[in-house]
Image 1 (cartoon, rainbow, N blue to C red):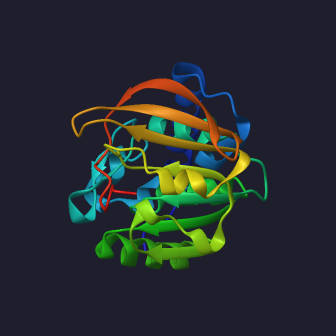
Image 2: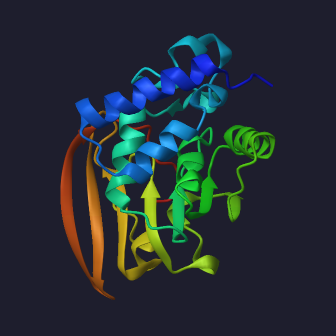
Length: 217
């Protein structure tokens, strides 16, 4: 397995400075986690030299690893506290999962693509990251067995709001999700203020890979 060298650590520090000073990330828990997690180990070695630039890269199953700024922004919007139960929809290559784990969250993660499920499971084992539960299945269904969750993060764009996920959120909990058509989504944060009421906040346009699964919930 590739190593995490002093060069990589130096590039991570530069990335974290960029996220703080240029993107405006102020949650030190997020910045510390992104300084800790070796992003270059989650992508193809041909992209390794560019791993700490604010760029997305192709991964298995025609998916992408999100821009570091997107990972940081979604993580910050969750307002994670140590020990909270987080449901992640779209494990992907596992980078976002690792950031959440480095923030000392209890992560339950779901991936629809078998290639990515197998890849991330192997990576976590190699790198010593341990989600509470890792599932291969339909992200739209969530993980009702483990509900309710303090926070839910959806790392793929959904054309329709997956209401089953909102049901699995604690009162007071938050869900961060990109919603909209395939070419461009808007990032939203839903806060569950009662069993049937939600506050909705909008955080601008993004482009995510589409969420797969049954949307008729």
